[in-house]
Image (tube, rainbow, N blue to C red):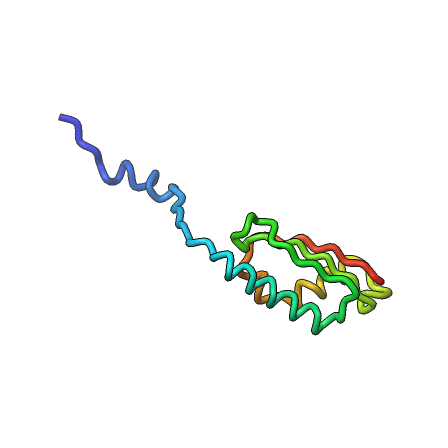
Length: 105
């Protein structure tokens, strides 16, 4: 008779990746997140142009931000992006992707 040993399969079981599924946010939560991001960026940079798009198909996990502000004058692009990400740090923790385009106008 053939029996399976727990010791034999334990190393394999430990290497299996566990998957967890989270419930995606509702479209209303996505709009709320966009509004929060918009308010924070407007307050911090007083932009002449600000566009925030949910490019994840409505689930609120990937945003594209286009912002133009005089506050970026004289700064390299990397520094501009760092300022934007610091401003919306709390919101970034909850999403999977972020695309940022900055300019001076």
